[in-house]
Image (cartoon, rainbow, N blue to C red; front, side, top):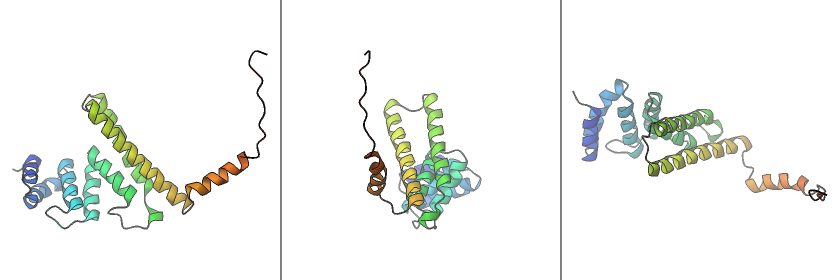
Length: 173
């Protein structure tokens, strides 16, 4: 019986069709790693027609089975809107945020176990942070539409300009 590692070997040899043929039956049985690999094939169009929706589905299934990198990819795809045929105002940002929290949680577990090196730790934190920032920006765009940051700053800054400044008494007098 073939295993996920056999598909990885075919992938490294750039035989993407063979890798897909190995991973598909394994993924059907619910293997998170095989599902993530299939997501990568479809996301990048390796040995298959590039299909963001199909990649998203494989990544989502893998994330639900506990794969932290797939959870990261799902969150990134939600934030970008890849593989999701919906208008921007209807993106399921709470689901993206949920996946971002899962990424953070998986990172914390791996970090607590010492499974992440000091140099890798910095990169993972940066990726999770970038994901969270992307989701927050998408939420702001969704909630406030076309308001620009400069418009909001002017609205907030205007009332503050009328505040009377009081002199502070020196301490100890």
